[in-house]
Length: 107
Image 1: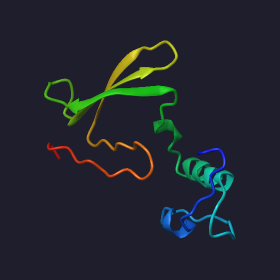
Image 2 (image 1 turned 120 degrees about the horizontal axis):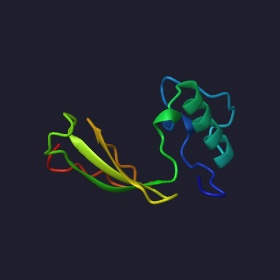
Image 3 (image 1 turned 45 degrees about the vertical axis):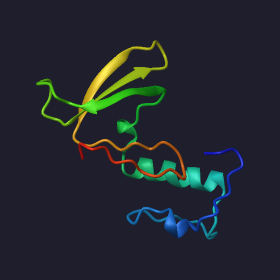
């Protein structure tokens, strides 16, 4: 979250359909938005899938026999710099707000 963020989009357009909030305001502060995301993460137990302090170095189509999954992702820990490879069926790239999605040719 940006330090002094005040959303200029109504919360109704930024919410997950399966998780409501208790805020009366329509336009939330950065603290409220952050709180909503943390509560969502806890409610659905998704933090176990998040790798903090990790850089994605490479995402490529998996042509090998290492895994039946389609994508090979190479990451590096910012603590120690150890590289790791993981395989996934799908990859979502979130590179910032106001970005136009790019769908690769091998979609």
